[in-house]
Length: 107
Length: 122
Image (cartoon, rainbow over all chains, first blue to last red):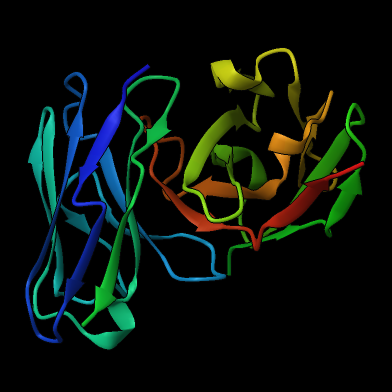
């Protein structure tokens, strides 16, 4: 099973600050890495698919990069509505797995 | 529009089984992979299983092997997830989710149900 680790576990930032979350896979997963945002009491929302592909309706301040084992989710200019937990998730080989999550809060 | 509507909350005793449904609408049911994910209270997301509704083929996470079964009913566009031998650690919100693209592998899952809370308590 591929293990995903995320850092940091928690990040508290001021509005408009840039947020960077990293996700590392225990073996190469190509670009089969996706990022989800989960707000309290809501279902997860797909933000970025296949490492760097954006989705319709997702604000442009969210971007993803990386391939192989190292990936990054960047939130440029954090807004209050971005307070959430962010998970990386791979669909490279079965079983799929999620990272442990990074909680982002506003200072 | 794509909708996944899950069945309501369940309370079960340890050792019992639970069957959660996920009714799909707004798209051609057999064309998209579905997976199940659970989230224990205050915890992260845990991948459980995937099903190809066209063939009924499934794959399960090792943690649930032998205890989980996913089935599909193409006449009602519904996916079922049954978990047996329940224990307190199975208390969680269970989600179904649909792949974002038609028969694309590997899939990314874009559409999610509202979640079904399963509580296991004596």
